[in-house]
Amino acid sequence: MGSALLTVLKRLARLGVLLAVTAGVVWGAWYVEFRLAPETIAAITTGEAAQRPIDLPVLMYHGVNSRESRAGDYVITPEALRQDLVWLKKNGYHTVVIQDLLDYVDHGTPLPEKPVMITFDDGYYNNYLNVFPLLEELEMKAVISIIVGETDKYTESGEVSENYTHMTWEEINEMMESGLVEFQNHSYNLHKVTGQGVRKGAGKNKGESTEAYQAAIREDISRAQARFSEMTGWTPTAFTYPFGAISEESYPVLEELGFRATLDVQGRVFRLTRDPACLQRIPRFNRPWGTTAQEILEKAAKG
Ligand SMILES: [Zn+2]
Image (cartoon, rainbow, N blue to C red; front, top):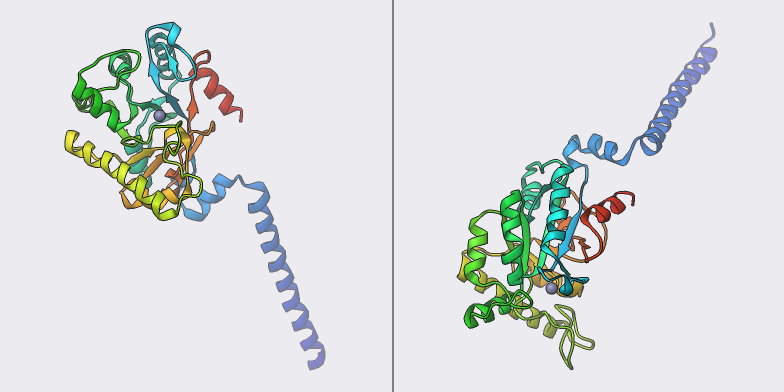
């Protein structure tokens, strides 16, 4: 065989190998892109099935009052709450608190099957009266975000009303010691919406400078943190935005104050990952009077 012919054959052989490799790569990329679910790709690329996002519905309650006449968007009866909790328990849901999310993000500590988070905002005395006994009976956990200034006020005055007073530090300590309730920060005194010059929750006022805004919320929220650790020995890890009023300029302040998570109100399921950033503005479902946790979760599961 002539050497010229041999060279041509060698070149053809190399081209063949090149084409085969290219086809393989293209097919492989297509397979990964279109045939595998995103969760599977994440598991392959990280080598950890634990990287799959976990769907975690978070329910938001406020008052729980035995007078049905008080029921509304932010108040339900103890019977309605019992119905929710019993349904969750019977259907295999397990309650988790913010600390469980932090343990998962920081250390990969597994969450229980079908996790759900139950949250109560504002810290009403009626939560101590009507929610705490249910949690004890059913052995379920909850997160209560308190308005610290209101707790100071009613601890001092001693006034008690199922309709409007807030829980005292003594009641908070009792609930904390049970291990069933985790307390979080809902501001010292930013829980306001009306009036001239009054900011909405921890939101930013129109025309307010970044510096003035950050100084104002830093002062209020750090006061609440200091009071918490003074009265309970516990420092909250999450800030619950009053009324879901949010400015991105609050983020660095909350980070500087040591918060790891913030709670928001957008009616969708929270997707937990190992990325600490996912704990920013955890979405929640309000649970008003006239529906049930079952209805909310079943609707959410359908997307
Ligand atoms: Zn609130």
